[in-house]
Figure 1: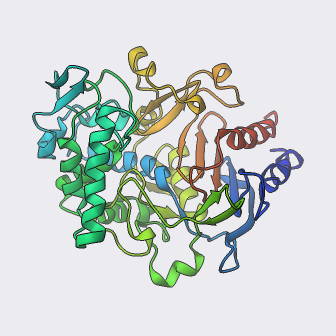
Figure 2 (figure 1 turned 60 degrees about the horizontal axis):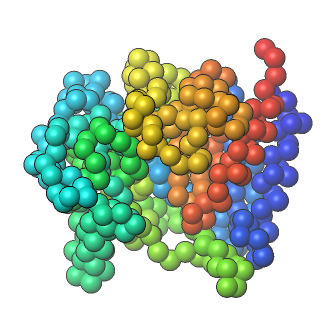
Amino acid sequence: MNQEILKRLDNAIEANLLGNCEDPDCLVGAAICVLHKGEEVYRKEYGEADKERKIPMTPDSIFRCYSMTKPVTAVAVMTLIEKGLLCLKDAVSIYIPGFGEQKVLTSKGLVPVEREVTIKHLLDMTAGVTYPDASFPAGKEMQDMIDEYYRKIYEEDTPTSTYDLANLIGQQPLAFQPGDGWCYSFCADVLGAVIEVITGKTFGEYLEETIFKPLGMKDTGFYVPKEKQGRFCQNYQYMPETQTLEPCTWQHLGLSYMHLKKPAFESGGAGLVSTIDDYKKFVLMMLGKGTYNGVRILGRKTVECMTENHLNEKQLATYDWEQLEGYGYGNLMRVMIDIGKSGQLGSVGEYGWDGWLGSYVCMDAEEDLAIIYVIQKCGGNGHRDVRVIRNIVYSALEEE
């Protein structure tokens, strides 16, 4: 890859590293890693991981993955498929009783489901499950449930387990009949509970034994132990009234404890922390068709299945986020299906996901290329930054 072109990443990223600023797009710190043909071809850290503690962003800084957790959960599910312990068309109610006899909330009230939610529905976000969102009826029901969940944690000190929360999720009304649409939701968190039921282990234990330890991901888990908290990135929130970035003191999506102690609910949708050095091993395993450094996590055909678009035309009609134009979806990840429509450089079949704090990963098997970009800011910094970074990286590819 052309190193002079890759150096343009510095200007693109540093333009937003302004500390206290008038621009809402400012950042405290960032890091980027570009992988090509199994090797790091560009790696740099910018600014601070924690400005209050004066900790610089370093190669081993620990960041909150938020929804970059989802691809890891999808891989864990597929290991059970390969072991013959789970099938994609299995009804979720086999494992999580709360998914039995579900109802769909329509304009005419609650109606029975026409078909049961399956594991495949969860992996493709086509189950009709929602996230907490008071802007529509089913989302409001989920919001009420999660508000009560938080009340019990903070007022009664009675946290809910991964399995018990999955049951509560299943008992909330669905937004549509399973398979009739796409809705970003708690699906990955339910899958974490399914894994617990099948394996008899906590979700975190299964990830550690099956993915993290074999790949050498020593700093990845559902919380940051005390001895590692000196490397933990602060999460910042832009405050328009003061035009400053201030530490964020709240979490959502069922997370609690600010990742500083072991949670009872290990979120398959948003709960992991990691480092770039750790997460790149996961990425290289995916680009290696399931194998990294001689360690096999998945088979080649499994990875091929995971990295294809699974949405049909009807489902794609509700997959309508602006940043996902040109993409399909499957196995908790976006998958590029139309480069022109996406409005950015790339390859058909490129896949990955991002997180609520703006961290982002994309993997491109055709070019044997990956980008891992880390920031820690509530709501991220919008998708324009990521498109700029992608365009620079893809433009640095040279003729073979």
